[in-house]
Length: 114
Image 1 (cartoon, one colour):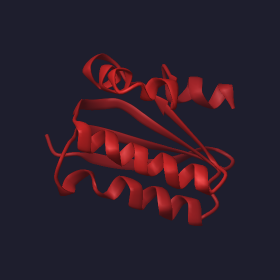
Image 2 (tube, helix red, strand yellow):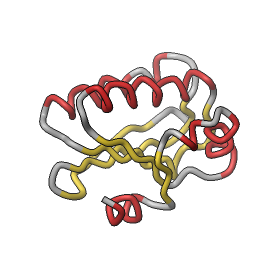
Image 3 (cartoon, rainbow, N blue to C red):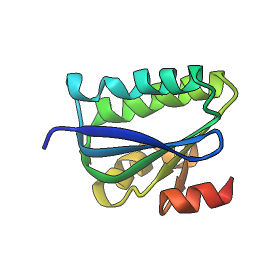
Image 4 (cartoon, one colour):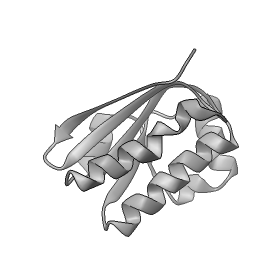
């Protein structure tokens, strides 16, 4: 399944980026940090990555989120992760990124914590 990336505003200054498919090595996941840059330029203050549709992730995919996190933090903004389960959450846990990124059960749960 090729990666699908979409985004929508879910609250003032808050955008959810929904990702579905495999976030792995190759050009298919390259748009993620570029979309983050575009949203930050447009004034987005908080980005919530909806990972509920992600079927697998590798180290390159993890790197896309690290790159995004660095851009978001440099802009003085916030990043949250939502819907990660199974192998996807485990990849973040093994790399200890679950102690760096804020994880929530859903986009709604993340927005409610803001």
